[in-house]
Image (tube, rainbow, N blue to C red):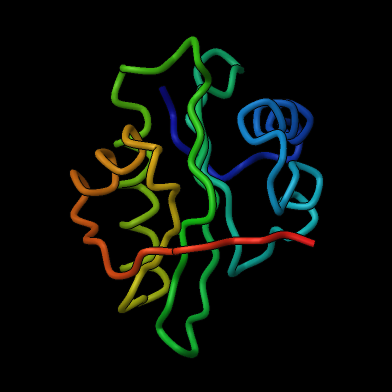
Length: 135
């Protein structure tokens, strides 16, 4: 498995995986690809030309803040440590390349697998979202 920033030739594969994993979310795969720049990145776990998983994060270096927006692993590649590896790669890049002081993320309280992944990476709960309503 190789970790790298999302190559342009893998955009379609990334979009398909993201839209499969997060079918009704605030950024679809196309929107994430459009948003990519120096402060918004996708790191993918690739093996034999197949994206096994990815992490999308955004930074605001002026304020020393970063946010992990999405992390997803293909169902056929779960329980192999890919999620943990992607989190570590994102954290490394955020803390070293961007000199981020604080990293935030938001996860559903019922998504216990994600919560376990994040707490194992050192995240702590700061707030609980009581209610959310989309337009």
